Image (cartoon, rainbow, N blue to C red; front, side, top):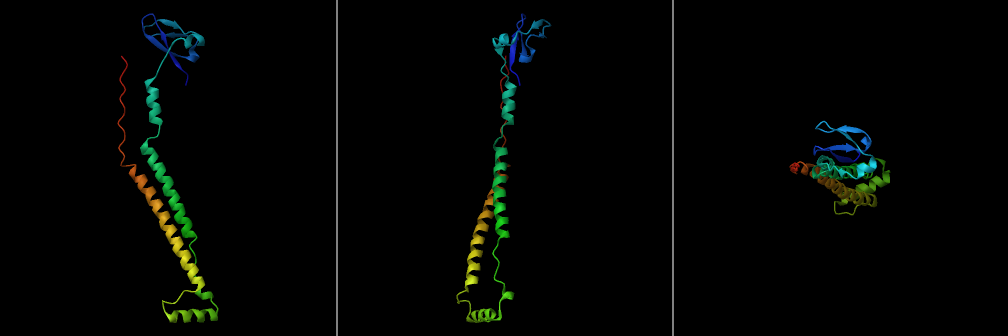
Length: 169
């Protein structure tokens, strides 16, 4: 957008002109035809400060009502990605159907000893991995819930009332 300048008229009014109009003729509201000076002459004129452009720029800027859902969406997606990744890589329990007869007899002996017996090394590895995965799954789920709460909080934020700018005299 090119700069706008105020071209004075003998009637006292000022007509806004732009750089591309340099060297042309424009008509004032009073009907008088005015010669627009060259670019060098335009630079000496009063520059038009537009109130509307400031309000348009502020309307285009993101407020808290736009930033919160974006932040919440990013946090939610990160949490859900963690939940999906942990769910997909959940450790597999030892497969009892693939045990050899000797291993099955050892497992049966362990079961007969009762719950107080120490788990076998494969079982203990599975229990540790499962516990770790469960802790990380809860953490990732919590992050996803926090993201959803941030998104929901955007609806609780009241919009700013439009700023009233005084009209020029």
